[in-house]
Length: 234
Image: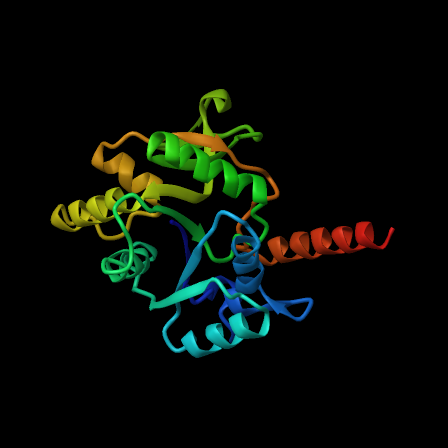
């Protein structure tokens, strides 16, 4: 079975809105619904689990019903950190999943993930056990060290995206090991695996597979939606 775990437990404090950003509506549809639709529409995704901001679970389920997200199987309460939120889903699914099931961990506000990316993630996870979306670094990177500006070689650098694909058994194991070692707030599944010494494998993401983190990202997403609508009307 192929399962998508979507994280939607953030408060979106940087947006300065009363509504958490995953529930902000663009063209009369909440951002989290756009993400759910990508996995709803993919033929190889069997079920969706969402880790939701506490108090918004009922709203999430209502939106899922309104927009036809029939694959929504589980809703879990979010934790204090992103890592703890993922753990709530991982450990909450112990009685539901098999060891070999493939899990795709996805940012709930990464609203434009393509069918190709989901397919490639599943394919590489089946082959290697772990699959991380990545894109090259296009800008010239620098860092500060003791007040001195130093340049990095961008050819050796990359950026990661979700989805992160992993077999369920391994996902449980790395979170159990992290708890034993006192790791509580690493930023992503890929960074957790690296910290624990496990190999990771990459497949190509896309610049359009961006995460909504700023108001500028909202404007970019609106532009993409408008372009898509214009192409449909031709």
